[in-house]
Length: 326
Picture (cartoon, one colour):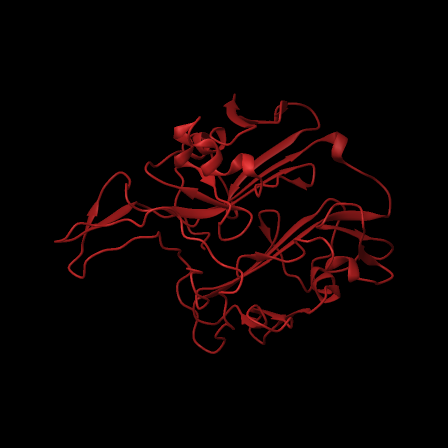
C-alpha cells in the first residue's frame, strides 16, 4: 500500500495469453503467519492480481481487463464510519440488478472490512462512489457534495466540511482514476456533529494483517483505565477520554495484547501478543511490512499526538509474508 501517486497504468503482455484470476481472492481467518522483522524494507507499492508468462513485455495501455485491483475505502459521517461489511454492498448480491457494480464493489470474503475491488474497467473515483448503494457524489462549483442514505452534505454549506483524500493527498474524484492499492478517505463533518467540553470521544480502528481488532465488540471493552475506555454502547470502535488527553501510543498500549513503540530510527514497531497466527512483532522497517498511523488522512506520531474530540484514528499493520496478504 502506498501514498505515492502512480504516473501511468501498465498491463503485461507476453508470448502466451495473459490469464486473469477469476473472482477476487479471499483470506481465511487462519492463514496468517508470524511476520519477518529483520530484513530491509522493500517497496510498498501494491500489485494487482495477475498471471503472466516469463517472457512478458511491457506496453502502455489506458487500462486493464484481466487484473482485479484492490484498496481500502473509508467513508465517515461526523465520526461514524460507514460499515461496508454488509450484504447490500457485496457484488454477489447486487450484480444481477446492477451489473456495472463489478467496476467497484465489496466482497464478503475480502481482505478486511474496508477492502474495495475493481474489475473489468478503469473508473474515476466519482463513478466508484456512485456505484455503491446509498452513496452519491458530485462536485458543484468546486465543492464536494456527498449523499448518504438520502441525506445530502454540501461542502459549500456553512458548518459543513467535506474532504476527499487518496492516501494523504486531496484529490478531485471527477478526474482521479482508481488505482490498485489506493486508500481513500471521504470525510463529512457538520456543525451538528461537533461537541464541546472536556470529555472527548472518537473512533480507533486497528487492522492487523487484514483482520480488524474488536470486530466482535468485546475485546476493547476490557480496557479499564481512569482516562481511556470503550463502553458497552453498541459502538465497537468508539473510545472515550476523560480528564487529561492521552497520546495515540498510550491508547494503543491500553488495548489488550497490544504495544506500540518506535525504534532508534523512529520507525513504527507494533507488538501483538495474542499468540497464534496473528501474534508477533511487526517492524515498519522490515521487508514487505508496512505500518500506518493516521488521524483520518493525516499521518501522526503516536508518541506525541494527543487524541482530540472527534478524532478517527486508523492503524494499519500489514506484511506480505503472511499467505494471500499481497
